[in-house]
Image (cartoon, rainbow, N blue to C red; front, side, top):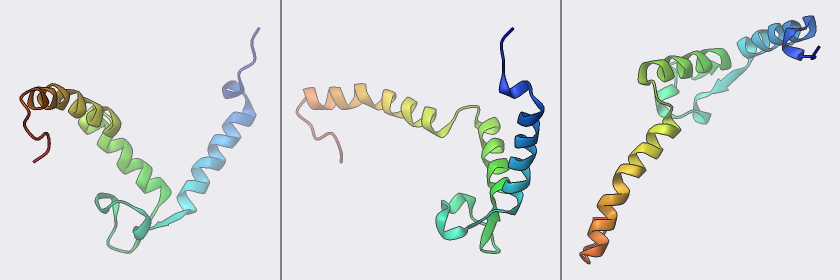
Amino acid sequence: MSYKFENTVGAQLVGQLREALIEVIDVDNSLLPESYRAAKGFRSLASIEQEYERRQTVNGVSDHQAAKQSKAELIPIYAERASRGEPIFE
């Protein structure tokens, strides 16, 4: 028999506490990227998480994965330019 904290009453209580805490923590707009900012000057941590999850399901790809894909696509282009002696960045 193996012990998993996730399957205990304590884990359920910790999850409920986490949910309650993120509802009351406000994040100032100055700490957020422009695309996450709210008109009232702050957002709750819960609303930021909901927005993040919504964006992840819409794109199907995380921001990090999208950046890696973009870089992988640009490497052959940069290599070709470098081999021809052209400037890589214009």
